[in-house]
Image 1 (tube, rainbow, N blue to C red):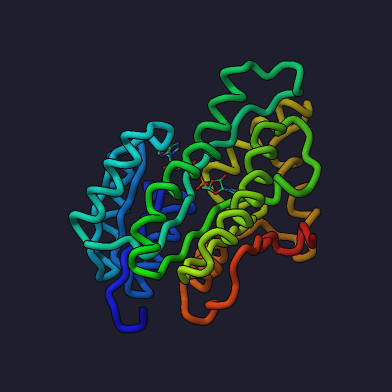
Image 2: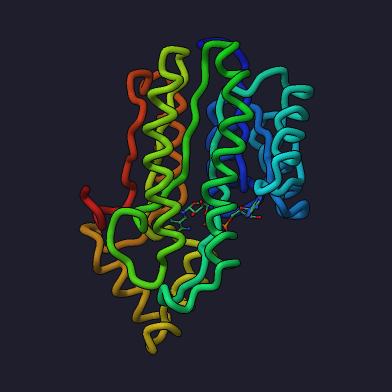
Length: 259
Ligand SMILES: NC(=O)c1ccc[n+]([C@@H]2O[C@H](COP(=O)([O-])OP(=O)(O)OC[C@H]3O[C@@H](n4cnc5c(N)ncnc54)[C@H](O)[C@@H]3O)[C@@H](O)[C@H]2O)c1
């Protein structure tokens, strides 16, 4: 693939980690397809990608919907002719509740976005990646799937589920020069983790600052993860320096989780 203009499709690229990953991949010369529910936020990411010197397109879509996913891939192929990289980033935090208080709708919706959406998108891009005999698929998992965290059971189930999905798909498509890896961030600085801390504080009957401090103290480096650190690892997994890495799940936690 050296020398060829590459295209990366980033789900949930409208904000947060997805935006950071989109900009990092733009910096390493990729054109970007941003697929997200939220048109305003996507528009901002698109302008930022242009400022980073690359082409970008946005597709408003809902990952849970099979037709939306196939329309997104079709639109990306019409515009750029290829999808070389798929970043399955979009995800939701799900409820912060003890198991017995979780409704079926809350459970199903977390699975629908975090697992079914990843399956649908992966299923849709594999044929084009196989045909071009090149692909890089990165699933954004979470260490919340690996370490025990109470009151997050639907989220934890989806994120560890993604590790199994990553390994299975990696073994299916490796011979086509398609690598499939997962990254597992710890608590990443930003709006979303502040919202999660707020919910933890409520559930634990404490304040947000104490939750944040205790999360930071759990890491070897005593800090939250910077979005740019996650984007750097994703960029590495999309580069020629990681050609023989597939089926892996890489923790980016400032040393909070070491397994
Ligand atoms: N922020 C963290 O601390 C953290 C830690 C570990 C893993 N992660 C994972 O990283 C990913 C991104 O997290 P973030 O913090 O940037 O989240 P975020 O909530 O800031 O952004 C998620 C994006 O996904 C989009 N989205 C949500 N549901 C969608 C759907 N059904 N269809 C299309 N788009 C949809 C949203 O519109 C939003 O733009 C998630 O998978 C999350 O689980 C985040």
